[in-house]
Image (cartoon, rainbow, N blue to C red; front, side):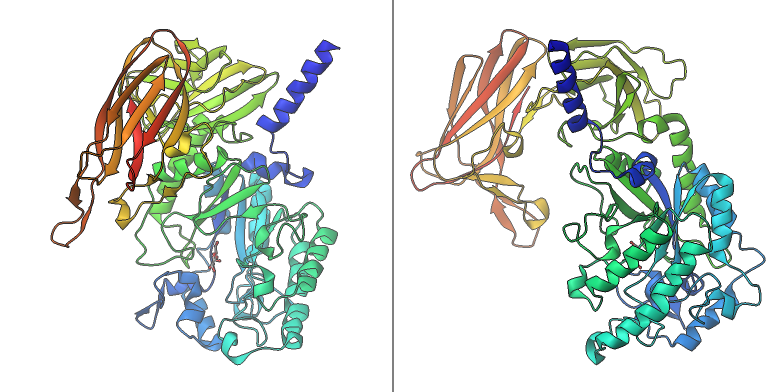
Length: 598
Ligand code: GLC
């Protein structure tokens, strides 16, 4: 019986700790895959962000918006087709690149907002079939290439916005208006039949990627139209995933398969419901001749790891040129990511979040995976510690074995484990130029010791208003101002107590410093009392004065400075509570920023 109960507890622990519990059967492949390729390619690719010498209007510089932004007529827009090099264009190459990049699925803009279908559509005469002599059907070519190379195919379809159809939505219609009947005509004669074509003629379609980034109630599209569309997809391809930009909220329709975050927004909280960030390598989605904000390979890898560490996916975009070429800057980064994934992919594919706070460690991010009976945690070291030691705080189970993930022989790394703390001896040199991964294998599920402030890379502890055990409701954090010249702080107007918890792995003395701003010039200073390990230290906060935020801009701000509170001896290895009281003098406030112990 006892065994049964512990098994039950273990199972419960398992579900709350690792599995992405709100993933439908249909979406399992998706949460396993974690990494896909977005392809923005269409007539706009040939404009390259410029029309008749003028750069695309609007600072957001999304090259695929040129039709609308630069007020191009539908007839002139299709002349862009003359610039395409059909002999050279080979969508299979994009799929091969995706494969080399370690991506598991491809999402292609079958019809973007410009309304031009990149297949031979019978439901519209604004499509490739009607405008090229080459009889090319890019959706078909991609579907075949994906099948050949073992990738899933998703299709982007702009349902809400369509700039070419008389009754499709373009934002100018906010001025002219459109009747529900007119919009429904567009819907029934273009959207529904085109979706039917896409879901019937190309074999398995694994995902339809809609792009209505606001809720339908703010648009011309009705809930009924969206349900009609969804029903069609479920009927024709029951396994096809639908993203949340369909426009129905998850409350209205829990049957949507995954949440799509905003453009280039990475995840910032762990979620059990599947989700994804669409992201660009530079800025624009469609090819843009003068886009140059290339994110580095490391930045992109960190984006992927960040998302996986919170149960999310990354859909990374390429914007090929009108001759099919993928800009070298994109290729290079994708290939580098691919070779990283070849060595370290185990920490990404089929992996997900572990239940420690997302910013627990200052050295990087953790992902987690169950392999057979064992569980492996993957420590992604973004910053290789100068002291060549990795400090892991908050896991009370002892790992069985630790190794460098890219090391095929799994040569063990030395480590010590005490209480809720593991210290790993790292190789002298950072093994990977981008992100090095340390794998730690545990029997069963590693147990967590919650609420601990982690030991930082340099060995100190950073106590913040945000990492207290249970902050009081009355505590009010003031966000940073003036571009961070005034840092984030907690306003203390009356006596306030703060509590943190740490695990001390090496007994000894630690000194405590506090950073704050205190503007009282009189001797009536605020009192700071700190208690830990049975001792109490206290000090009077000295005024911190003013400082100049920016030279010559008359930008004078309250200064934040740190002051030593004193020293406390932690005589034994173990858990300690750190309690601090701030007692400001009457009618005075103290702005508390942080405490540092070392
Ligand atoms: C936005 C843009 C669109 C782009 C998409 C990618 O919705 O309108 O051009 O395709 O983001 O996420």
